[in-house]
Image 1: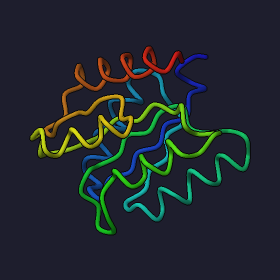
Image 2: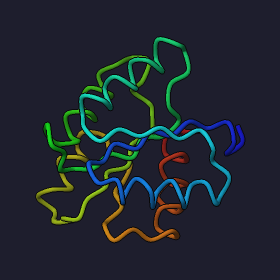
Image 3: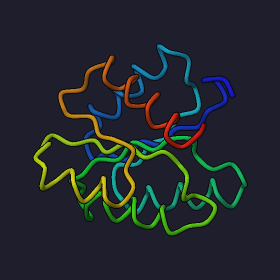
Length: 134
């Protein structure tokens, strides 16, 4: 599957973080990118894509969101038989072990720290897809 056909979801309450991720992803050839500013909207997009039998190929999700933490989205994802293998990368400005470890234990495929680095984003995406066999 080429970058052009892979579908990516970004869930982050910061429009500037979403814009930066979209900029980086677009530069390397991704053009099917959706975003949500809160968990509720992220859940909605996940469910819509799953109903259409076109699940996302990768999810970036912030830790701190206005209506909860990204861990709840990850846990829901890992319990869904259709979506459980979807690569998930946590976005955080707080990379302390106490923040990251619950995500890793719940099945996150990695994390990127803010400020974002293009090289780090690409590295984490490649590792996540390799881990999930995508």
